[in-house]
Length: 450
Image 1 (cartoon, rainbow, N blue to C red):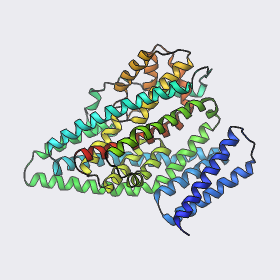
Image 2: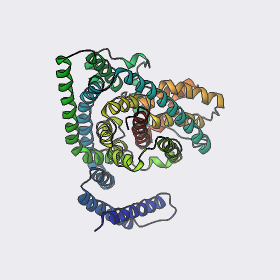
Image 3: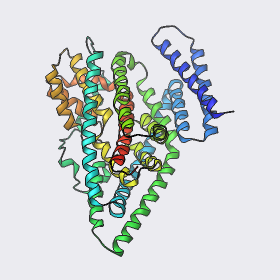
Image 4: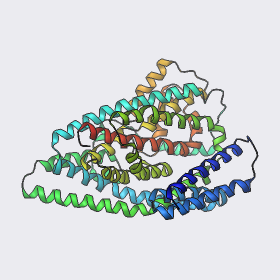
């Protein structure tokens, strides 16, 4: 049977299944539970058949994602235990990131590119990141002001959300945007997975190595280049765990929170996803057209890391595969190694959009009507506070709480959002990844490398 026909049939089944579940969930019509499950399993079996034919990792990831949802529905206690696969995958990924970034950056600087190009890429990247994230903040403001998702809401945080918020706030530490860029101990930076500090150390190491001459430099570059090749092979091995990790992550999220929490915060969730889609269509797509991005090729190469980022809600989990695939797409390693990891600290499009949207939402829930001046002032603060915190656990929530407090609002009003934070994190992490992959292509285009 033609794979293309199977793919169209799968898409049709997916939209039918999703549509019927939404109709039943919103109580537009009462549908038989047996019918809903039958359609779901027909879709899963068809997806499994397509995965077996295509042998593609992305399809297996999608298959395990839907299986995880089913396990969460039928056996929630089992689904909660499946999180161990996600934890194993994330641990293995974290072991890859530091040596992969170090080796690719050092070889890119010392082995292939001149130091002036590194400086040019840095300036172009920062300018691009700042412009695009500022637009993301503005779109978030427009979206929440149009939807008015928090107006008239009597939303209250439950005990579970309060406890979770307090745990996150306990680990809050002072964040100096400039100082935190630089490592004080590279071993500590690696242990804490501080990506930006690893990048800075690697750049300085590469510049120092570039100043060496002769055999010593050649031997060191060759050894580090070999390390880079080994780490890409390591990444391919770890990716075999990705489908199980994705299934475990999505199953755990649904089994732990359930769909019930979506009822109270559905308007906020829909507002966020509509805003994220609008950002992609109105900003990222036009940028892609301007730089003549090969969209089909681009989507093919980011589909695997994108599915991982969505299901695990972790940019780190998708970083090694994204680096490998962008290089396969034809973007030079020296550009990928520099722009992509830097973007995960400075170009968090989805996260910055969420922060402006969520901050105004909390104000609306509190019954406070923020003026245009206050909202602009808030955006200026977020432009600074949202930078360089990608490695901090619960960073988005911590920034949200501090922003809300600076507006004179009760930070505890933000606690209720944690009920659906996992679902929102999936969307914003996915947009972060798309934005950074596009940024990598844009900088490569500006440098004449593609």
